[in-house]
Amino acid sequence: MKFEYPLGSTPLEHDELADLIPNHITTQEQLNAWEEKNILKALPWAFKQKEIVSTEFICKLHKRMFNQTWKWAGQFRVSDKNIGVHWPQIAVKTKELCDDVQYQLNHESYSKDEIAIRFHHRLVWIHPFANGNGRLSRLMADLLITLQGQERFSWKMHQDLYKASAVRKEYIQALQLADRGDYTQLLLFARS
Ligand SMILES: Nc1ncnc2c1ncn2[C@@H]1O[C@H](COP(=O)(O)OP(=O)(O)O)[C@@H](O)[C@H]1O
Ligand SMILES: [Mg+2]
Image (cartoon, rainbow, N blue to C red):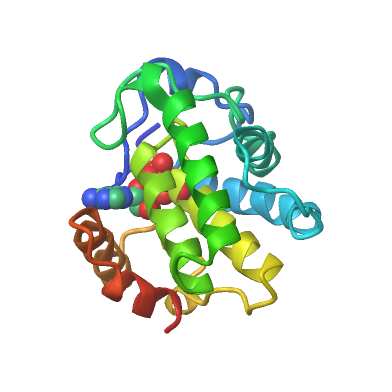
């Protein structure tokens, strides 16, 4: 089995791959399609949830998105990646993030879009799981913004940002700007 890793993705470890649930998958294409189907099944449930800003919910959502794909769905990673915090810090950092976002919502610290986009960026920066962090964090931003009564983000009309493309490159560049505290590009990207 050969997997490609588009720019800004986190290669999977051998034992993480061993935990792939379907046993017929031999190509990246098949894996992408399988994951997509798994995620689609999670959406109706996800958009009905009201309390989403918690570690518990983040794990539950990851589990729903990938429960037919990875045995470790919903469980934090236990090794380090090229992005993300040192793995033993994931729980603490995720809780800190949720507390901060709750505070920002209560105090209207930023616009609704900016609170959701900052949340997206910080969650993907923590990188709690071995895979699926981009898709999980974009969905979290979508859930948060719709709960605020706003429209879902468009992410430049790309539901498949996890695949290599020029649009993905633009997205990763916007994230890298956000790493330096500048959210303007990421805000624009999410609404274009
Ligand atoms: N420099 C960066 N700064 C912040 N986030 C990044 C950076 N590079 C990549 N990412 C995020 O990491 C994601 C890839 O992680 P991964 O766990 O493989 O998610 P997925 O499988 O959903 O694509 C990208 O979609 C992007 O959101
Ligand atoms: Mg990935």
